[in-house]
Length: 375
Image 1: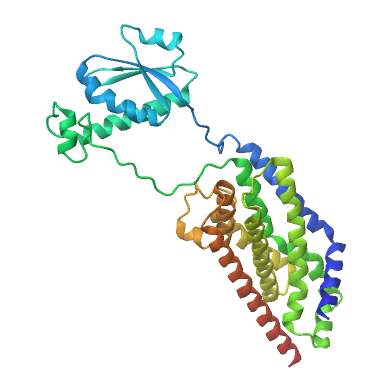
Image 2: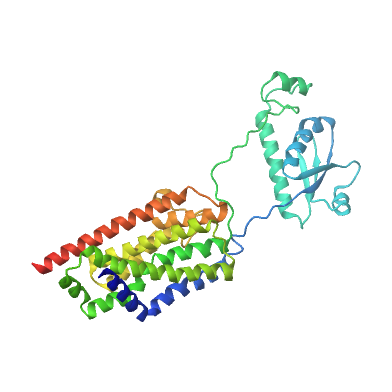
């Protein structure tokens, strides 16, 4: 019996294929617009590569205290310091095509830079500022003349008399461009709007009294629920899978781990289907159902990164954690960036839990409504 109902509901849904087509084409159009609009803002960082910087100094003390330690740190960042004597800074920049030139004095320094090496100069200035800042904080009292002896006898002090800097790194969002971000998150967002694909099915159910026939046939509410759940989820998966292929072919979206990404998307669609059917069972009206579901999905999308990238969003983490779309977005984005993420388990748990909870409520409400009509 349930196989017949599922097959029949598939046929009814495909008679109103316009909504299915809209759900497939809408994310393509929206993603294309946003990818183009925000391509410069979310452009992936490109490394500067190795480059040379010239320098000169006014005293031997400056070389001992500053330059020796700075050169070691700079080399780790791909910056090679080249010493110049009796050479004008501007001449060295032009003749040797340097990215920058630094004149070191006793208590200060001057940076000369070229217009075509902006990224390199930003890195250079950052390193100089950080080094001098840490040096001024670390040096206490008079520096020892024998720096090697100091390094051996005083913990944490190097050759220059400057305490070694400990670099701490915290959690961060790896670089991702607009193509991958918007190409991914709008499949998720429109997947949560899948209830529109069931408009033809619910309309036919009202028009032809299919619900009454099911009641008279004695079929359980669980089977009646599954006869709607399965085709609605399957049609949505099929429609959005076409978008998934198009996103790779047209935009070059990187989905990272394909298996995990597909699993997360399917479970998200199942949760969205269960949510829509639960709201419909409570409202018993298709128009009201669409309005309520869209309001909920829009709110979840707003805090979950569908309209403002969740990495830069000012919304508190507490609100983000209340959105199932946030978990799905973050899991897929980090799979694209890194190939793995802790949010895979969280997304699966949230989507799976929502599917069970919403399905249970929908079946319970339909059972109570059927009993009320019989009495």
